[in-house]
Length: 140
Image (cartoon, rainbow, N blue to C red; front, side, top):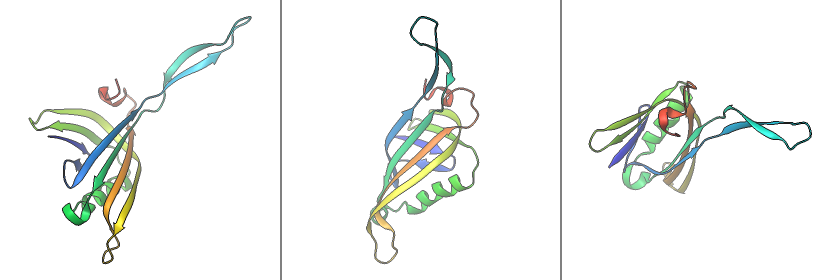
């Protein structure tokens, strides 16, 4: 079993299940006009790298809504947090400090008493904080 920690928020099998990870890396290649020839390109540095986490919370069966709200609280604190991957053997990978750019959710099957969805699908987008390399190898 493996885990991913985003600051104080831990994604594990239950209650806050991570179902999909998406990495996006960008490189900038500026067009350079050449006299009498086609345009060439010159590498001018890396663009913004992002990492998207997608997951599920089945609040009515396993709980987890409070943990999800903790994730939003971490975003609203507007502070960089560590992104750490862990395995069952307690081996870990420190990816570095990241900032939470975006948190969204879709709630289904609303509970008539609480107004909270019994099923919650969420998405979190993070990016490196420091600019010293893309996530310490996460994208490399």
